[in-house]
Amino acid sequence: MTSAEQRLREQLEEQLRLNEWLYEQLERQRALNAELRRAVADLARAFQESLAAAVEAGEAGDIDAIRRLTRANQQHWHHYLQQIVAAANRTPPEEREDR
Image 1: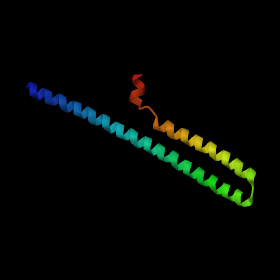
Image 2: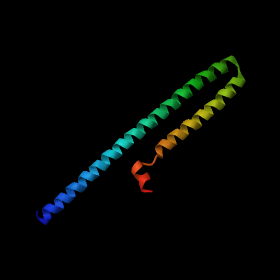
Image 3: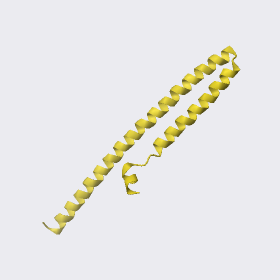
Image 4: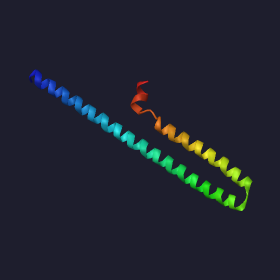
């Protein structure tokens, strides 16, 4: 094998390693995106339920219920925001192993 052929072989092997790494990154991003979509969907459902309950309480004139629902909604927002931030900041496994 000539030196030019050897360089080509090495370049091909490097390209194959890079392609594999890129595919792994793509799969990781897909998993993170799915997790983020689930968290956002959960947040939207909780908000819609809370909003509907607050509207009912408002129409009934129940200020205490509105306060409770508002506090619960605030806690839900905080919880789901933490989930979204945690998923977005998740460290890839290969980076964790190096540390």
